[in-house]
Amino acid sequence: MTISKVLGFKRTLVRKMDIYESGVNPSGSATRQYDVKYYLTAILFLLFDVDLVFLLPWALGYQNAQDQTFMIYGFLFFMAILLVGYIFVINSNSLKWEE
Image 1 (tube, rainbow, N blue to C red):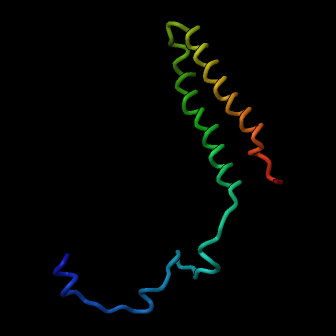
Image 2: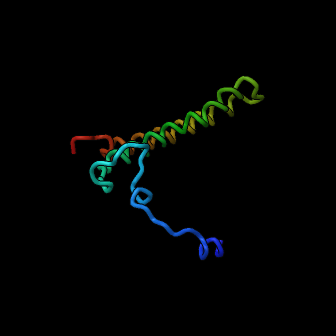
Image 3: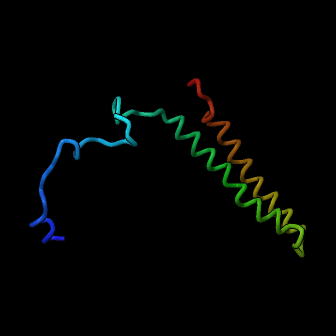
């Protein structure tokens, strides 16, 4: 790599240094700021959507479980944790777009 850097071809063209964005000329500023509400909504969506990843194996394993009461208590505990998180989100006014 060092030999290539020292002996290599060193021609810089304006066309080579131009910004390329899928063949479309860029317009506007690249430092556009987004409101925090968008990020907060995305994080809340991920937080409450990931529960399906945990509930699907539970639902599939529920029929084959030996102790179904333990499975039900586990489900209720998990839902209680989600309910506490949902109540916290509602009380913190995170979903209000007007403010």
